[in-house]
Length: 97
Image (cartoon, rainbow, N blue to C red; front, side, top):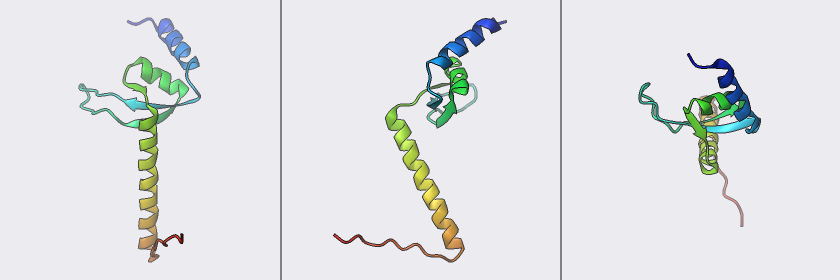
């Protein structure tokens, strides 16, 4: 049985080195059949546990940026779909130079 006191000391020590919110990337988990690469934002208390368990790693700035771009595009698409269902058409206007 693992030493719980040591486990929580490691968690708290790791947590102190992290910012309040941390971006993480999941790793492959062959035992669960999961493929890694999912980018998530987590509080430092949760992130410390995931990093110590080696199920996630800190995300690179490029990964975070790509994730945010995908999220914005998905939100925009959902908004436009909602408008179309209400009978509202979205027409982009050309910018004058």
